[in-house]
Structure formats: C-alpha cells, structure tokens
Image 1 (cartoon, one colour):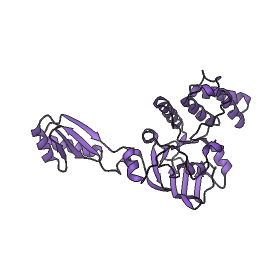
Image 2: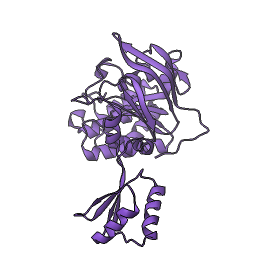
Image 3: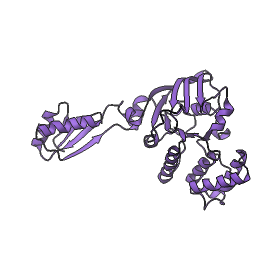
Image 4: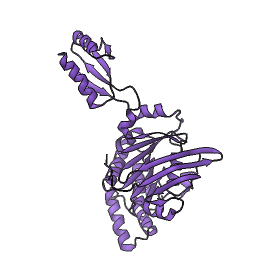
Length: 333
C-alpha cells in the first residue's frame, strides 16, 4: 500500500455531509478525509449510500447539507473546479459500442480539448499502457468485459486527472481481469493519483486500500486501515501444533485461556494478530521448554468485519443504489 504524503493537503474532505430522497436519509452527517496519493475504499451493503456519495463528490448530485471539497474545490460553490480535477469510472462501462477502442479514446481527447497532435500522442500512450494496441482498431463488439473496463478507465485518464472515482470497477470481471485492473490501480497510485473506490469485493479493498470506511444505512460505522478494522472483530488466534499429547497438555497449562484439541494435537490461543502477542506466546513456551511442531496465525478478514459492522446484506449486492438515478443514464465522466 502507498504511504500518504503527510505535508500535502487532503485530496477529498467532507464534513457533516447529508442527503435524503423522498424523506429517506441516505447520507447522515458523513465526515471523511482522503489523503492525496492513496486508495480510499468505501464499503457497505447495497443501498447504504456509496454511489450517492460518489455522485455528490463528482458534482452529479447536490448535497442537502454539510460540506465537501475535492482537490480544494467546494462541490457546490465550485463544481467546474472539481470536474477539471477528477475522472470517474462508473459501475457500467461508458464507452461507445459503435466505435473502435482508438476512436473512443480520440473522441475523449477531443472532448478534453487536447488538440490533434497532443491528443494522438495521449491516445497512443494509453493504448500502450492498457495493453490495447492490438485491439485499437477493433470494434467494441469484439472486446471482452475486461478489455471494455480497461478502455473505460483509459478514457477516464485522457485528461490526466489527479483524483479518480472508481465505482465498483471490477464487477463482473473474471479473476485474471480483476488482477490486471488491480495492478493498473496500483501503478496510478504510485504515480501520485488518488483513488476513491467503492467495491463489493472485500478482498479487493483488502488488497488495494490504504484506508477503508464502512457505510451502513447512511452512517459511517467504522474507518481505518484494513489491519485496524480487522482488529475490531474478535476471533483471531494462534494455532499451535504439537508432536505429542504431553507437549499439548503442558502448553495448555502454560497458556491460560487456550483451547486444546487432543485428537488433532493442536492448541488454539486467542490473539490480536500482533507480533508482540506472538512473541510473548513463543517466549512462554520456550521458557517451559515445550517444542512446537507447527504454527499458524488466523486473523479475522474483511468479510468478518463487514458482517459484524453492517446489520444486513441484500440478496443482489451489485444492483445500483436505489436512492439515486441509474448511473447508466448519466454523464458519469
């Protein structure tokens, strides 16, 4: 994960951000700070308000209350300043299926007013960066889902935005395509780009995010690094394996609160997953001259965190937020 630059101003801040639809509160006083040059992931069940948050931060929706600044610009008072600083890739690829990949990129370069020479140069760079050179002249009808998503992100990057909003960017992709997108995101952050990510794939947030916020029913219920969030959930333990029952019984006596399994010759020791706890356990065994045959550390994952912090999951987590317009119908870039 990328270490944020502490001297840089935040890329995104919100204070008391609120939004309601038809009397239903979707965002209830959200306070966030996103450091420049990092990946910030917003997690939550379907309908929690994730896409509404992105639409406010990208000026597609006006908040009902509170403040939000993106790249130093207020989303309400200076929407044009925000739009010049950002790019957005929504849940559905916003590419023209009647054009080739190259034609889509050239169209975007024209919309960004790059000029003919600079535009052609930028298109060539992006085709190379996203491994689309061989498919540049191919109609999008022949593109795979992963190729379409790569092209969609490439189009977002034509104007070189420093802040990119990715709303569930890998939904529906096969594992290889997902990993390709992950590497592209890592490369962007390495170059100093800030990524604001929403995803339903918790392993994706775990792999990419420097910080994660969990949104449920319009309220933030937790925020921190992936490791910090995992420590919020009980269940972590160290599993020790022994060569004989005598060592197992001695270890159980030396480590109070542990749970032995005489059949498997293993001992489960409660742990927060920290190095200090592991060192203390091993030191106590060493002091008692007890040999350990094997060791494994089990810590809660983000799935455990998600289930513990949110009180329901919808049956279809990839449906759009029901409280805001269909993202396929808006100009999401």
